[in-house]
Length: 241
Image 1 (cartoon, helix red, strand yellow):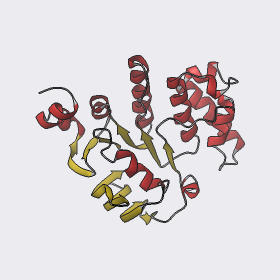
Image 2: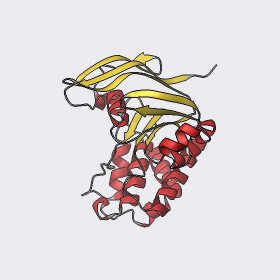
Image 3: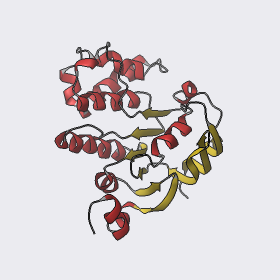
């Protein structure tokens, strides 16, 4: 039986009278790459922020279980200790720190120096552009390079679950392809991923399963390859049909 890493049940999020998320169910099993797709404003980022406890003042209802335990009222800074990491929309790198310093910040909960150094080399192999610029300030990197750095920094914490929020946003087509190549590489290493993404085609091509979110509700879910060929998904999100 598949091991549940994340299970969301009847999640509702409201900002005043505005219902941003309307009672969704979603689960991610160990080793899966799950994508949550939908138009801008569908509630995808709000869902991720509800998981990580980083929402502004609002009403949150429902269950969010991570590795079998509720994280509804867990402080966001405790999440990394529990090996749950998120790469936020907009990347959020430490712009006045070097690439290497950013990576070390990703490992701040660890004290295994040899292991940390080995991981730096490991992710430099996956992201060779970062190795070339290891002593460069993160703020001087291109958007795509900052996205790579944000992902590598999150991976330094050895996450049991990696949340990716719109990793392709604002990037050139060539860089988008590169980012998705890295996402597939990370998934192939057995790291469990929940990917929120507007580029539905690339997301579904990379994922094992997918969920479609529209106006705060899950309107469809299933095998990602099947969803790629679904006429409704093609018409709404893939510009086909």
